[in-house]
Image (tube, rainbow over all chains, first blue to last red; front, side, top):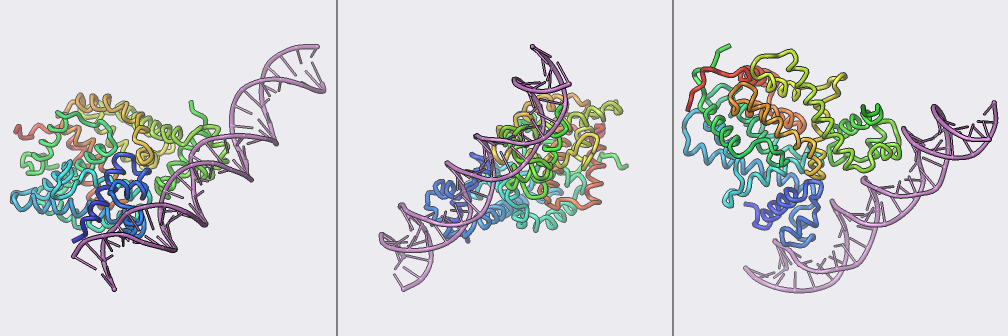
Length: 187
Length: 187
DNA sequence: TTGACTAAACCGACCAGCCGGTACACTACC
DNA sequence: GGTAGTGTACCGGCTGGTCGGTTTAGTCAA
């Protein structure tokens, strides 16, 4: 699909943004990090906007690929939710591309213009359907998804929200919730 | 405490960041929005960093004040969690100051330098204790908190994660969870 | 000979921070 | 009670460095 160089550029951009902050995501830094020249970068991405949109798209693709992979092996109720949860946890996956580093793309894109989140926004209708049809209480499914978002955001921002033990307990509880819970109150 | 002008500057900065994106948070725009000159702004905040830190601090203060207010009237288990949840929902509160608009401060600060989140990070140990001691399962308390984070992040980014009905259902379920749930499985 | 670059000079807009002011209230001394 | 001095709040033009983007001239492999 996309060339190897393009992929290297996207990953380099994510590394720069992660290491130095999204404000410091300069095209020259990206070029250097990717091991190419500034001209070479412009050859692939004509503007910074184009690069940011490509980063957001890559984030979406990696997330959905991961969910598809998980769902292939998991046929129980709540599989989509567990897939999403799993996608948000990827620290680094050479095969799929690094997700947690790409999630900084959302921040970088939103920082300069929220309209650049279009590739993400365009999938929300689908994601919401998937959550509503995941086989468990929709509200619970949405909560798991929101908590997963909370996890990666806090990670990106380096806010010490959870320690290692708490994170494990939270993850286990989220997985448990994703299988549905027959004993819940009915209100 | 802090002068009226300082407060006006903080709110103006939040409005600018919300309306035009955190990358467009320029000191001159803030000054104009606050109805003062650039020189006047520099009189109160010597650097942009100082302004950003003040914004983060204001965010933390508003959040904790809100939680304290809620807890004064709510003595049941999970009160702190409900307070946090409530704080994250404030769209605009002239008495307390606007929270949802200030939450953009987190994005703005993190965009230029994650170290500016110090006022927030410094409260995390306390917040984690509050969650662990809230009277309900710590993991569930953490999840509610993370979901609340997920809510405001998606709001700031204008990602259409939930429609109005879903949001209400999610909120109701989060509140229900915050009272603890005796019927949960034990793993 | 085309596609994928390198290398490096350059431009123009933009913006944080600087600085030399102004205005005004308040104190203090004679 | 006048005048000098002091501190606070604020004004707004200026500048120096930065950065997206352009341009040009050339390399190299398939």
